[in-house]
Amino acid sequence: MQKLIFLFVSVSLFFACHSNHSTGNIKLNNGEKWEVNAEMKPHIEQGGKILNDYLALSGSDYKKLAADLKAQNDQLVKSCTMKGESHDELHKWLHPHMNLVDKLAETSDPKEAEALIAQLEQSLKTYQNYFK
Image 1 (spheres, rainbow, N blue to C red):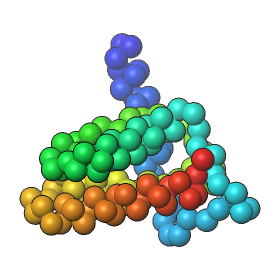
Image 2: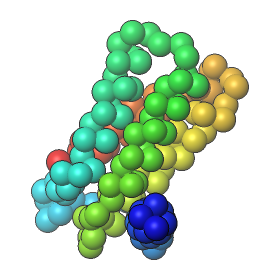
Image 3: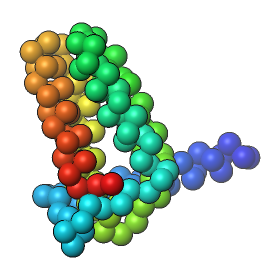
Image 4: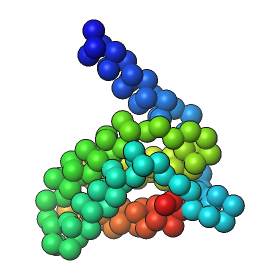
């Protein structure tokens, strides 16, 4: 029974965090960066560390990179408890970021992978510009 309750809560959080998310350009919070809650922040930071380590070591296994980033994104979604405008603005960043990770996982072209990794690097810079 406990497993069933956990599954229901997990699915509910997943859909709550994935539904009705905003699209478009990210905006600042009255000129300030948006606050990301403590439960979600470590997963974003770890994803950044994984990407930075890959780049620093001139990694070549982009499939593993994609799998590692996807695992962090999955944990991020599971930890989603944000609500309101900060949540909506985070989704404007997160949804395209997750799409890049998915594309990286699907590609078999090293040149395309290289371009996607550069876009992921830019995506993390965008996150840092709008969120704290």
